[in-house]
Length: 315
Image (cartoon, rainbow, N blue to C red; front, side, top):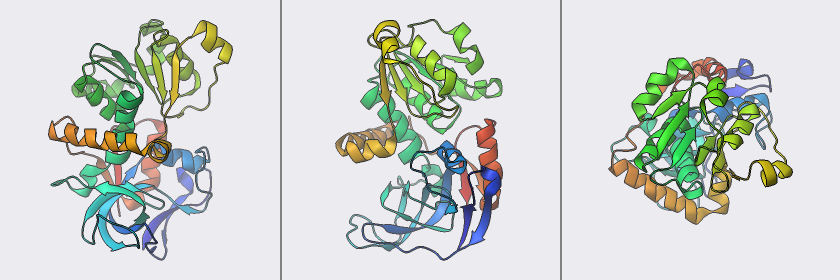
């Protein structure tokens, strides 16, 4: 089969198309013919060696895909050959991949329309509702609002009655406004535009100096900063500062850990996503789809911050 292999930790420039043997489904796994693979910032971090616990090169890149089940391993129930699923695993940028964690593609949706269900939308919903407890009247600050998780978060926060302030680069402001954001600002204007202690929930995916500013704008005592990423690198804030200067709630959120450590909460999230689909809050996705060979270019553009919305590769 054709696949994209990451040859080193030098970024997308070290990714190339290779011919390798297709994998086989083991116990508890399904083999999927990939219809479309999702491109995520975690793919960029893995290609740079900054994703904790990520694979060591050379490795087959990608970890999110949707497609048709072509083989079912021992112990797998609730799915048969011919079903279409969306899930995660190693080597998604390929014609075939093995999955152990997956859910059905919603009825009537194409494979590419389901990308983001498990990652983007579940991440955003778990962050805002399970952890952030967003409620009507809250003010929510969403970083990287034009990206896959960000767009989902804007829709979700508005549906639950929040006032949404979003950050995005200027060319992306109209996209974010159309999603329902009440106010859109550039990340560089965050300090001047946002008052200290003015936000109930911050969806923090940037890191670096933005992490500190996110802490500053959170409301004292009840404000929550939900950390879902670190695109700009590490940041730090001391226990002394959290005690005396910024008494806010800081909550880490990584979806894989959430699924493994709180499966009952994840089941609630997936059930709620079904309701959002039925209500039209979560419509079929419209990713920008590229050929597999364009993967290195797509990842480079994602890293440069010039992309909008969900991105996908078609093998």
